[in-house]
Amino acid sequence: MSKPSFISAECPECGAFFDRLPVDYDEDGTAYAALEVAPCTHAGCGRFLCVDCLRYNCYACDRVVCASHSVEVMESGKPEHYCIECAIEAGEYPAPKPPQPELVYAAGVQMEVA
Ligand SMILES: [Zn+2]
Ligand SMILES: [Zn+2]
Ligand SMILES: [Zn+2]
Image 1: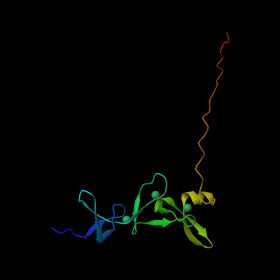
Image 2: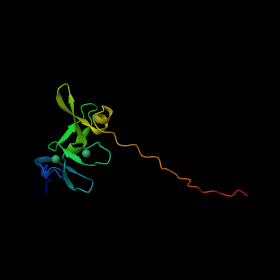
Image 3: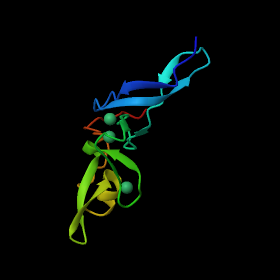
């Protein structure tokens, strides 16, 4: 039986349908579609974005970010997409609050020193 060399698949993220994707086989001979995806580089996002997904390359650092992790910044009169980190650096996005130091109250505890 000859193995098919093309397969169709749907992007799990945006649902775009891809016909005739090249097929890759893993060592067990399981076929899977070689769908080209790029992960969102925002820490903790974990979305894999296909060419049809709404994704942006950061104008400043060129990293791929998904729509919810990109920030529109006006750059010489036209909107460009920044990743959140670069937008914070450019002062275009509110920086996350630094973690508050834990307040330790030594509330009137008096130790008797023997
Ligand atoms: Zn997609
Ligand atoms: Zn960036
Ligand atoms: Zn993301």
